[in-house]
Structure formats: structure tokens, C-alpha cells
Amino acid sequence: MRRKYVSHKKFKNDELYNEQIFMHGAVAPKLSHELHDILIEDEEQSSLKKKKAEKSNQVVFYKLKLVGNVFLIFIGCLFLMGQYASITFNQKEIKNMKVQLKEIQNTNASLKSEIAESIDLTLIKQKAMGKLGMVEPAPHQIVYIDIPKISYTAYYQPNNEPIQPTEENVVAASFFDFFDWKE
Image 1 (spheres, rainbow, N blue to C red):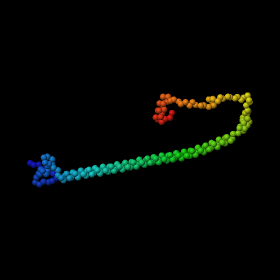
Image 2: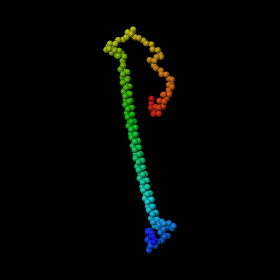
Image 3: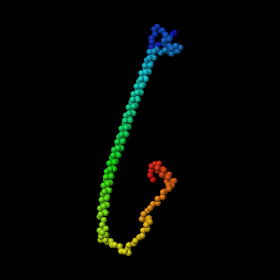
Image 4: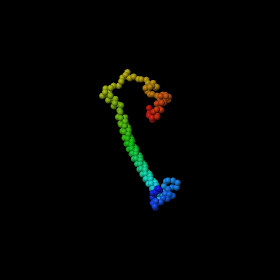
């Protein structure tokens, strides 16, 4: 009994056409051109859908990157504007403090001149003798002291010889220089 192969074509009266249905020398059925065309169309459609989906994903990713970059630029600009505002505020404070310093220096200078003008040695001598009961010293109460020209009490002259660094100082200095610390 012959087996009947059913494909998308209908055959009349149990006719089998081996050359039309089966591949020559194989048991695999021969695909018709219509089925092959349908499969190619399906593959093309699926590849087109994949390309469209990939392209839409790329567009969405590009838009997200663009929005993210714009946001970062916006945040950077806000930070920069804040820094400029802070600098301007500090400059105004410095200017006001300089004006106040000038006013205080002028006040100090005027007070020093008033004090210098108000000192009258004869008036001070009269108040000391009259109110405080002070008297001028007698000649035997005055003692004179000879101060030599070179004296440590008169002035100090430091030694100008350079100090040679020790190994401990060099190590400590290099350690502090590494951290930008000052001794």
C-alpha cells in the first residue's frame, strides 16, 4: 500500500508525484515555492520588527542620555552661579570691613593726637605734688647706672649662622610636606 503525503497541494485520485513531493534521493519532503516564500516573508517581517524595536530602543537611549547630559549641565551651571554669588557676597563683606578698618584707624589716629596734645608735664607735676604728696628727690637719693654699649638688656642681636638640619628634622619635614602641614 502506498503512503499518501499531504502537503498544501491537493492531489487527485491518490496520485503521488515523487518528483514533486519528495527531494530526489531523500525522504524529506520537497518544500514548495509558496511555502518558501511565506517563510522568507515571515523572516523579513520579524527582522524588520527587530530592527524597528532596536532603533526605537536606540532613540529612547539617546533621548535619555541627552536629558541626563542637559540635567548635568544645568546642575553644573547652578553650582557655578552659587559660587559666583558667594564670591560676590564675600567681596562686599571684605569691602565693608576695609571701610570699617579705615574708620577705626582714623579714630585711633585722632585719639592719639588728642592724647599727645593733652599731656602737659607741668600740670602733671603740680597734681603729683599737690594731690599725691610727692616731692622731688634729694641729691643723695639719685643713683646713676652705667650701661655698657654692648648689653643684652639694651638690645639683642641674633646669630645669623644657618642652622644645619638634623636627620629627624628632615624626616619630619618631608612627612609634613607630604600632607601640606606646617610645623
